[in-house]
Each structure stands twice: as C-alpha cells, then as structure tokens.
Amino acid sequence: MILLCLNSRWENGDFSRQFKIDGKERYMTMGEEMKTGTAMTEEKIQEPQVTETMEDYAAELEASLRRVREGDILTGTVIGVDDDRVVVDLKYYAEGIITRENVSSDPEFNLKESIHIGDEISATVVKTDDGEGNILLSKKQANDVLAWDKLKQMMEERTVVSVKIKEIVKGGAVAFLEGIRGFIPASKLAAEYVENLDEWNGKTIEVTVITADEEEKRLVLSGKEVAREKLAAETRKKVAKCQVGAIVEGTVETLKDYGAFVTLENGLTGLLHISQISSQRIKHPGVVLKEGQEVKVKIIGLNDGKISLSMKAIEPEDEPEEAFDYKETGSVSTGLGDLLKGLKL
Image (cartoon, rainbow, N blue to C red; front, side, top):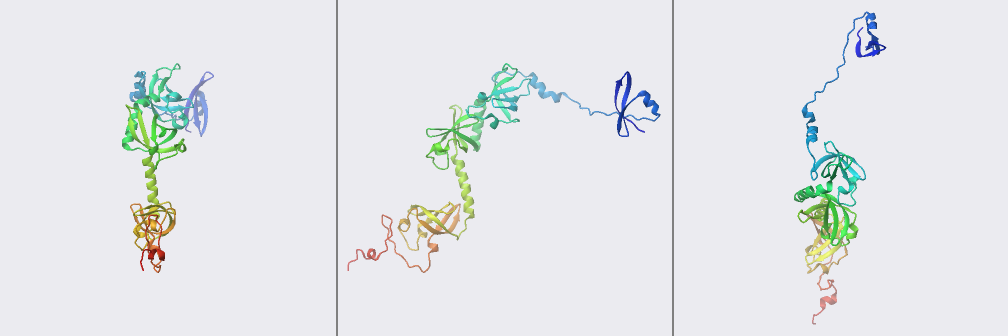
C-alpha cells in the first residue's frame, strides 16, 4: 500500500500527518503509521516557485522614486468613471482624479459615454494632494498643450472624425474636437451651401480639420469634402448599375445652350446634348423642351461617372420630320401660317 502524504499538524499534543489512501484522505499519528506495518512512500507536493527579480519591480520602483510637481503632464490608465469624476492609475503611490469641470470645455461632455475603463489619458497635475491623498488632474489643461499637436496632425493627414454640432452662430456652427472649440462655416457644413442652419443643430457629422492655429487659438472644421466624397461614391455605385441602351424616364432639370440636364428615376442626372434632342437641327433646347417636363430618354454613354442621354435615339423611324424655329420665348413654331409668314405672292 502506497500512501501519499499531503499535510501535517499538531492535534491534542500529538503530531499527525494527512495521507491519501486509496483515494480517501485521513490523518494518522506516528503510532498509527507504525501499526500499519506497511511500507509507506511519502511524496511532498511542491508549490511552483516563482523567482522574482528587480526587473519585475522596475516600473513600481521608478514610480515610487519620481517626484510629481504641479504642472507636470502625466499619462495613466482609466480605472474608474462616474458622473462626476474619472479615476486614473498613474503607477504611483497615489491615484489621479479628474473632476468633471477639468475634463473638457464642452458643457455637454458626457463622462461615461466618452471615457471608458482601460482608456489611456494624459492630464496636467493641478494639485499633488486633493486633501484625500489623491493627485488632482486636469485633462482640459493638458489639452491646451497636447491637443493642438494632434489637431495639426489630423489636418496634415486629412483625418475624418465625427463631431456633434453644439451651437449655431452667425455664419456657421460650433463643434468641439479634442476639447477645443471649432467653427464650421455654413459653406463647409455639407456638400452644398446650407441655408437653414438651425436644422443642423444637434446633428453629428463627419468633418476634417482645415485650420489648426495654436497661436490664434483658431480651429476650423469642414464637412463639405467628406459629404461630397460620400455623394460621389454613392453616385459611382448608381452609375455602375446603369446600362447603355436602357430606355428610362426622367425630368428636365435645367436648360443650357448646349443641352438639357435630365434627372432620372434613380436620382442621377444625365446630359441630353442638343444634338441628341431631335433628329432635326435646333438652335436651342428650349425649342423642344422646358424645365419640369417629363421625357423618355435612352442611355447612350457612361464615362467617368457621367451619363449621356438621347431622345433622338428612340424616335420612330417613320415619324414625319418637323421644322423647328427658335424664338426668344423658347416656343416651338411649326404651323403653316408661320412657314408662309413674310412670303409675298
């Protein structure tokens, strides 16, 4: 019988050891062990030994030796967030505390929505002791030093970020980025100029930084480029679905000397060149068309996202020819009286 020694203890003035026998555990005194008359094999359970070196404590040692002064910018990991403050682990003997008013200049900044446990955060030391043994920090002050560098980098790299419009002011809107108040001109708010700014208050839009002047404390943002790129991408997708030869319906949007722009059923706009309006030669699109008129056209070309249209291509072959005479009003003149006008008999 082999016994596995698990533990030992003193009990009632006698020394006993714990053995595991046939899967069952029990304590046996020395006398009981001798009475068994059986050879016993003891195996000691060895705990894994971990050898710790000074390198394991290097970070803690360095933190304990450094001296924190007011004005220093420290970086730590967020370990707690509530409605009124953020708690930061600085790898120091004291934790960092950032109160709500010291987080951002944005009056509507939501701590729980914007900051999460595990985030890395940099802040300026306001007080080395807030009265409760913690270090009082200000992310807002650190932003004045660090945010502008980040904003300049965003501008150089044309980084696209989301911001929420907080206020409508004369000529544009206000949004905060990296805790800094930024201005979005009305001409840069969307793909096209925005007439009613109030409709944009509270909206979240994607913008790029177009001006980041630290000396003048001037931050200007633009959503125009991002909006236009999105619009162009959507247009390319729609154009890709169009097929040359397809006959579609549309509405005449505008008339130009060289043709008419027609808005198709899918929302895309194509050019109906003056040469494709009629099989007859006309001096102006207004001879045949007017803005708002419903027309049927054929797609005859797709090139670089542009759609070429034709009315002439779907005219019946046996349709009698018409003579068009352009007037300033853009009306069509085909009557016999008009043809004979000015003719002396």
